[in-house]
Structures are given as C-alpha cells and as structure tokens.
Length: 375
Image (cartoon, rainbow, N blue to C red; front, side, top):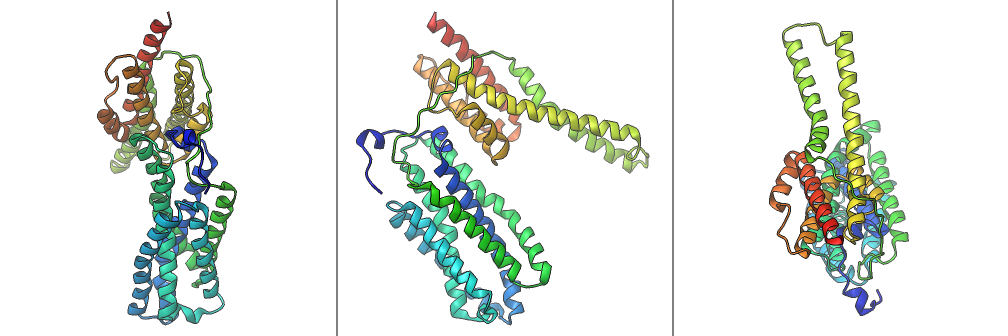
C-alpha cells in the first residue's frame, strides 16, 4: 500500500464518504457472505461429522481449532491488513476453499482429528479477520467518533444477519442428508466474496474522499405531520392484528368475511404508503440539507434512500448522523445543540417516527437561521 500525500492522509472521512465507496460495500457484502456461510456450516457440522462416524470429542476438536483461529485472524488483521488489506481477506478465503473442497471427495476426513483441527483453525481465522480488518480500514480514514461508530455498526449487522443462516443450512442438509449441499453453498459464498473483493483495490481509506453535492431547495414541513404519517401504519397493523385475535377468541366469524379482507387490504395499502413516504422523506431531507449548505457528511439523496430501506440499521444510523450534522451547524452559528443526541438515540430505536420528527424540526430551524444569515 503506497503512502498518499499529506493532505489526503489528513482528510477526515465521514460516514457518508464511507458509504459512497465501492470498497466499503465490497467489504460489507463479502463479510456478510463469510458470516452466513461460516455460521451455516458450523451449525450442521456436528451432524455431518457424526454421520461420518466422529465422536463428540472429535467434533470438539473442530470447535477448539475454530477458537484458536481467532488468534490467526487477529494476526492477519493487525499485521497484514494495515499494509495489504485485500490480500489479508482473500488469502484465508482461498485456503479455506481448498480445504473445504478436499472434504467432498474424501468423506473420511470428517473424522480425522488433525484435519478437523486445521479446518477449524482456517474457518475461525476467516470469520475473525473480517470484522477486525474492517475496523482497521475505517480507522485509516480518520473519522470522528460518531462516523466511525455508525460505519462499524452497519458493518456489524452482517453478524446479526448470519443468525438466519442455520435455517438455510439445515434445509440444505435435509436435501440428501449429506455434506455436499452445505459445503457447496459454503464454497459459493466464498467464491462470491472473492469476486466482490478483487475489483475493490486498496481497501484502506487513506486517500481523499470523493466530493459530492446533490442539493434540493430546502422546504419546511410539519414535524407532527411527518411523525403522524410514519407512525400510523404500524399502529393500524397492530390494531388489526389484535382485533382479528379478539374476534377469533370470541368465535366471531369475521376473519374469513369480505369485511376482514377489505380491512386487511386497506391496512396493507396504508402500510405501503407509509413506506413510500419514509423513502421520500429520507430522499428529500438529505437533498434539502445539502441545499442549505454543502457538506461531506451528507449522502446523495438516492444513496441515502436506498441505504435507509435496504440496509439493516441503515435508517437509525442515518438519523443519528443527521442529528450530529444539525448540531454541528448550530454550533458553527454560535448556538447550542438543536437536538439531544441521547434522546434522539433512544427514540431512534423505540419509536423511529419521533426521532425523524426531531430531525425535521431541527432542519426547519436551520433553514430559517440560514435564510436570516444570508439576508
């Protein structure tokens, strides 16, 4: 990894800068594939080993090796990833793929203690290097605390998503009660991860971020109306579910009637409308804040909208960064914080529409102050 210029190395990356690069999403998606594949294989591994005649003690050797693999993964992350980030991720993937392929034509290896220890070591190193190396890559961009925390939080959702992998792995194992479907799916995850990482180039964020500015004319809107529109769909869904349950408990035959069908369609239509409005609000607020004042902390409106609706925890993270941005702008104008980050974080995870209304209210005030300053 070549050293960049001093001006580039001193540049502080923001969350929006990270999320606007291919390399971030390449690491994100490849990390997701590794987490899903590794978790799925580890779940059904004891069953596969027992079918090959392994004892409980022999199977334990695999998990012992997997634990030791975290030491190897930490070495790759802290020693190798700093200089050769892509190689630190791709090399253990390829080694793990070769070892996994060796299992397919030689089922007897599933019962070999030495081979199981080595496979566990490689798999553990692979699953450890991604989260550790990701943190090192992000630190290289010299982000602020909130930007770093939010970027790493999004990255860590890959581990949460992998919790669903055992369901798929169990289904694959049930196809023919063998290792071939599970190991094949694991190898597919490894291959896709390599395909994503190869075009990423240098994974460290030690260069200057790309400038971007997609302004939209600022427009004030009622925070109460925004909150009401967004909170109505979940409330209606909850009330509909409770109502149907009560009618069923009282043996009222409304669940299969045309009235119930119409109510269900109405609630569904309102929920879709609320989802569309959420995407619209995220799109507009990022463009309007950019229109009020350019900032590298803002994503382009389209990118923000896609992240908010497609990425797990994407919306809460974006709302928190918007709150921090609005506070920063207020401090630059000699005012105090316009949003309490603590309360914003609480409402963000309990009742998100309230947090969104807080952002809209602060944005309205910033538009007014900005107009007064301009005049």
